[in-house]
Amino acid sequence: MKDYGLSNSEIEHLIDEWIPNEKHRKIMKRRLIDGVIFDDLAEEFELSVRQTKNIVYKCEERLFKHIK
Image (tube, rainbow, N blue to C red; front, side, top):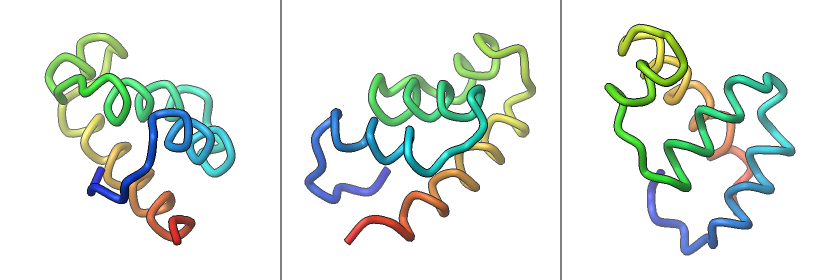
């Protein structure tokens, strides 16, 4: 996620508030807070790398709309 000067707890709150799908929330927390790379996320969540990237990019778009 771009550097918006947010703490991990603020990022986690945004994810919890604006990402309705539980699996997507977990993926986003692992990516944005823990810094897990796409290949490892795909393996962890039993998805393809392409699926993982699509989820992350769509969720990031949704989150960016709510960052002031």
